[in-house]
Image 1 (cartoon, rainbow, N blue to C red):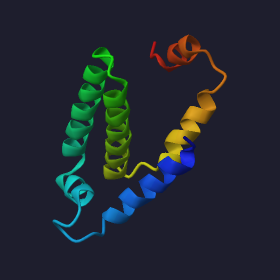
Image 2 (spheres, rainbow, N blue to C red):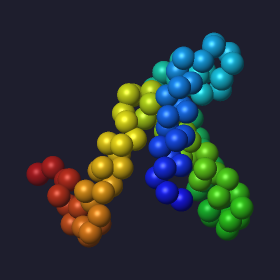
Image 3 (cartoon, rainbow, N blue to C red):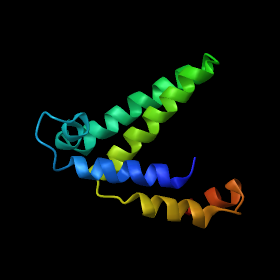
Length: 107
């Protein structure tokens, strides 16, 4: 998957901000605020963990798509642009995960 798919989905989610009330599931999440969006993201993440531990690849694939979607809704609810997240990932490329984590830790 290219980041173009995520970028297009993020744009669709942003467009849903102006949808008619009750006409869009995404709009209802955004209207409920960041706390509700975070809760829904957490629920989907847990469902992905359950699918992964059940070793059900089809279920994990579906749940992973839900996780991506709800993460994008959460980011939109906080006005965080996907481009900023992608730039952060790009900046971390080529860095050991251990080294990157150690660099983020506070003294």
